[in-house]
Image 1 (tube, rainbow, N blue to C red):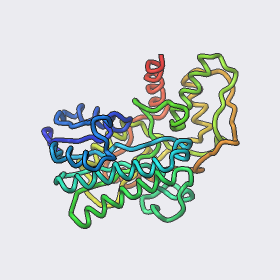
Image 2 (tube, rainbow, N blue to C red):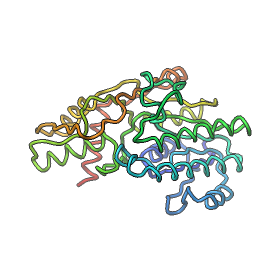
Image 3 (cartoon, rainbow, N blue to C red):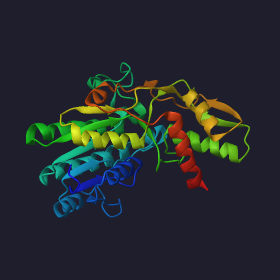
Image 4 (spheres, rainbow, N blue to C red):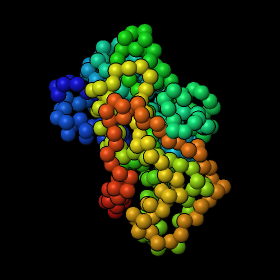
Length: 309
């Protein structure tokens, strides 16, 4: 990408898209095209076609998606499948029709089989059954990877895919019904502290292991891949380090300064028992994460306090 390249960020207001936007601005890119979901419904084929015809971006970061945690994924199964398929089908196809130089499609670590060997290597895709609670979202994202590869094979498009691990950072979602585990815990402990509660209830057993990447590190990786990766298939983006949900709860409790107890509700689902990314591929390309989990959560909590006050 040149500094004057026209770059479209789909989903620029979300946690991932806004981080990519900040990264590009920091690197000196100014010809950045954005649209809010009200200005452009990416599920609308005609609207997306008109947008690409008018704007003709040279590069596309496809970060727009309908996302959520276990509860949202399981409750809104049809929406998670339909909305995500429509968004990516329209953006990828119009990128081909309008001669986009390069597109980066972003997915999620939930594409992997529920019981795949750990750490998760890229080649484990489609080797087993998916986690049932987020299967519709995972199927949409798998379709996006395969669509990028198919357009590369048939039309020679330089469309690449990257699958981040669990993310956190500025512009995260703190709604307890639709959020992921880390922001949900920040909010629960903050409210527990504010209301002088003796305990905070957490979902599940606390035994599942998860990996967490600060979204600024993800944006850095996306920028790196857009400049250095031009192959079919996809690349995992993560830290290669994991933590149990119980350890995460204790860490956030300490950072927030909540002094009560942790009450685990094991009637609630745990989700996938373990989900650690193998990051050998992106490390070999020359990229590594930079933001330590404790430092990252501490900075995010400061953001949350100003957001919630």
